[in-house]
Each structure stands twice: as structure tokens, then as C-alpha cells.
Length: 248
Image (cartoon, rainbow, N blue to C red; front, side, top):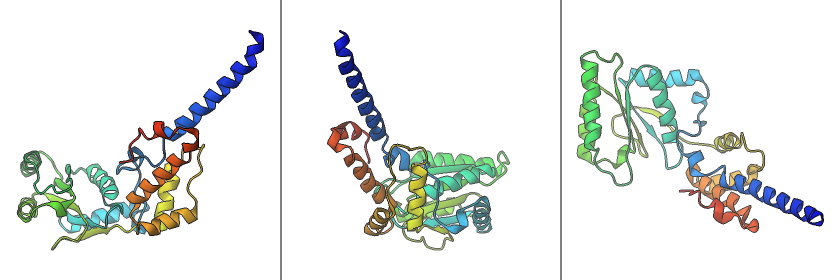
């Protein structure tokens, strides 16, 4: 029995080390649950680096009768910014109804219009003090008829309208154009690794390579980095366990 103790101790050490690595892998810093909008702050844009920047954008939004658009290419931070700005609107007393359109979704569902009518009615009768805001993520997917109906229902003095779109919408002020830089990418990575002590973050040359490869699409950069950090542990046979955490 006593002669077996060293073997038992070594086995325990190997199991503990393997479990520690498995814990790290299963918590890949670039997994979707850590990079989806609402999980990381919006870093891009000098005007948005402090609270005064938020106030500036809010004043801009208010001066244009609470009707504006956020434009930018795929994966450049439109929805990330939208989440933060909507939270700021709510802190100012606005009721914001946020609806995200999915691929090829041409119509807003009945529940959206029901909620919209309720908020507009409450505002008209004085049940809520601040003008309500309809928030549409993916506006360009709507049919022309739906766009006309939406704009008419959000006319001046009844409801605000805040949208995201890849291409500027006709006759609507642009609140922000999202265009991340290499510095933006590094800032987000530093945020993702703020509590990670067992892994090294990607270095500057790799960040630059991926940023250029995807032409500023940070979402695609996350996918590549996710795969890279899974592969770091493949030689230990732990990739299968980590891959249970979907990157998509």
C-alpha cells in the first residue's frame, strides 16, 4: 500500500493539471457568449470614450427629433454600440422597445406593433413623460412597405426611431458610423483577457494580420481567434470537450 503512494500522488497531479487546462479551454476567451453584443463595451470612436461623448450623441439624437441611424459594415460594432446607447436612453427616462431582425426577415411581427401602439398611447395621455423610442436592429432587411409604415408611425412628436443599417437610409440623420481600427481590436482583446491569467493574448502581428484579412470585421476575427485558441490544446486531446462551446 505504502509503495503505491507516489504513483497515486503523481496520478492526482496529472488529473489536476488536466482539469485546470480543461477549465481554461472550456472558457475560451473568444467564445460567442463572451463576444456577443451586450457582453463587451463599445470601444471604437474617440467621441464615445467617456460619458461626455455619450451626452454629445444623445444631444445630437434629441436635436433631430429622436430619429437617427447607426451605419457600418458587418461586424464593425453597430449592435454593440446600439446596446449601450439604448441603456443610456433608458437612464434618461425613455421607454425603448428593441427589436432585432434576422436574415431575410421582411416584416415586423404583430407583437412589435402592439408594443409600439401601447407606448405611443401612454406618451400621448401623459402616462410616461419622455418620448418612447422604437429601436430596429437590421433595418435594411425590411420591405419598402414596412419601412414606410414604420417611419409614419414614428412621426415627429409621437415616437422616436433608432435603427442600424449597413447602408445609410434615405433622409435620416446618421448618429454614428462604426469603423473599428486595429487599436479597437486590441482594446477589446484586453477587455476579454482582463480576468484570464493562464493564457497569453494574441500579439500585435497576429492582430494586424487578422484585422487586415477580414477588413475590420471583428466578428470574423473572433471566429479565427476562437479556432486558434482551441488548437492550442489539441495536442492534449482536449479540443473535443472545448468544442462543445459553439463559436456560432
